Amino acid sequence: MEFDVSYSLEDEQQFWDELDEIVNNRCETPQLIDNHLKSYLGFVASFQGEYLQSASDWAQCGYLLLNSPLFTTDKTYIRNRLIGRLRTEVSNPVLYLASTILLCDGRQNQETFEVMQAEGLFPRLLEVVGSKKAPEDKECRNRLLDVLYEMSRVQRLRWEDLAAIDDAFILYLFELVEEQAEMEDPYHYVVIRVLLVLNEQYMVSAHAPPPEGENSAAGQEVLTNKVIKILCFKGDVYKTFGENIILLLNRETETSLQLLILKLIYLLCTTSATYEYFYRNDLYVLCDVVIRNLLDLPDDAESLRHTYLRVLYPLLAHTQLRKPPFYKRTELQSLFHTLASIRYNHFEPVDETTTRLVARCRNVPWVVEKKVEEPAPMTTDIEAEKPEEAGRSQHRRRRGREGRGQGSKSMERQMGTLTFSRTKLRIGIAISIRIITI
Image (cartoon, rainbow, N blue to C red; front, side):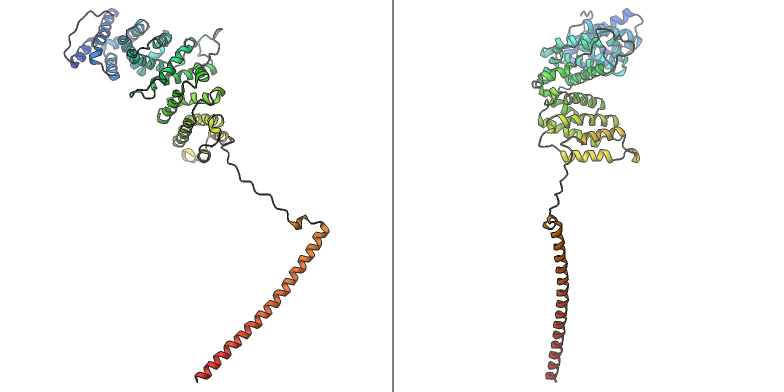
């Protein structure tokens, strides 16, 4: 890119001062806007190696432009110019800066991402990300992945945008997750959340009609969910992805990210080819996380609670958790009892959906508490006797009871006589002692 003005800077402060001077000009014509925008991009590209050492430094450059008179004079025009840069630029510094500005702008104003989609930028981003495979391309690639994620998170992608995603792109993302993690991104969060949001886009495309005004004519068949497809055929190669989404669910507090993770886990647990995708120990961790989160959710988080319960059923019924040793069966039974009996929002009844989902989970065969069978009553000899023999036996028992009664009375008379004799003996001894004493 041409950069007509040469600068010689002495320190970082001078860099920021010069940049501030470039953008703080109110330009009234498109040509003046183009000139200053060109100077801004060129100046940053020239000194980024010296003064922009972190993602926050780049973001500061972006916000410096977004809050300047140069941008506020004609926001739409500058957005379109930056979109044009992304469409044609190949150098990492300018791609990184343009994508950073649009990312920061889009997070403040969702319309920016909508314009980017309308301008057909999604396939271009797929192409650029797929081509950035060299080590020095990593930062630029991750920033473009951030843009892809935000574009896909805030709106429904068009059919042609999803159709532009090929198997090679999804495979490339899974391969990135399998690479050795680094300190700043130990779980490959930037890559994983793109896979998560694309999975959701496939789900929406398969189950919801196209938006009003979008052409749904011939040629728009239901698209294969390529995220699940790759895991069906090559899940044993990409195990790190499964481990990481469980770890992310364990620490994630943002509801939208939890929902994205749960939706993918749901598909993995309801697709027969991926029932065994997760390692058993990872399933134990996942089960613990689900139990804890269900118990910790606030009363008003009904939607998230329902999603957890919808995921928990196939998790218990289809995965390796269904096999001995039955992990946390007692804790699960306690959880279901709590969810079904507790009263939320000042003793209001549990909502019907929660009740239904809990009942479904607690009826998973291995979760159901087995009742101890009572022993069958023993048959006695008397009960086995014939009627006439039973009658004679009853007569003998009656006579026996009468005999025992008479024997008891006789014993009582004998005991009474013995008691009287003992009393007389004690009186006689007492008299004798008294006489001797006198």
